[in-house]
Length: 354
Image: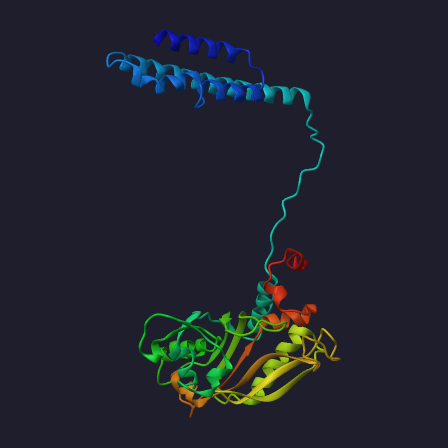
């Protein structure tokens, strides 16, 4: 059996020396170190040998197998190197050809628009204040004058997070608006001087979430920018003047606006502000629901209860707040007919914004 193993090794190495291409090398591997190769068949015959022969034959069979595998690897490396050298010698590299440019990414259009809004508000004296996206029921609703079972909760279909909290106030939600940031900001500022808290002029940007039907003008998640101004002798006229100036800076001096009476639990009086639809020029289309106008924000004077919950005495302080949808404004500025394009991640759409 030992002589047979020597013959197997010799014959395999001789045939390997004559191989000149990778296809023949693969065939040699299957024939000489594959499952049905002569050297592997020796292992299947070990049971017929005596106890004295088995160790010797087994050791020699392993040596032959390892030697053939090493010779195969060496031959494979040599063939690849030879092929590379042949390719370098026969093929020419044209170094005068221009290189392929790397395509740089860019800011998402929603991010670009959000930065534009915040830059305009910063020019108007607003400071950016960020707030958390996961809120308690207390901050998202109750402190904003929306107690449990209040009808206004039906205005916003909410994503609740299962945390096992038994207390209604401690239930966690994905915030349905950026308005909870009003309470957090007022409490933070009023804590510095409870008797005479400082005036506030802040913008609160962030993503909000609502469990509602996706349409050409609504999504389940979208950005919102909240504005809050609190001070002494703040009036509804200050609110209208601030928002009118924002629209002029955002859409141009010729942009037409209108205010409509509305209702929000955390403001009183409340209003909604519309801008003439730039998609259809006021004639009526699917984006503006044939009205010629597109709502861009809700606003109003901060409700006295909300001021008190934030640590501000409503007898001394007044304020106004507004919440705008940046994606709606993006649609107006670029005449986008479907809000779903913004979050669809279609490069054909995104590349238009550089």
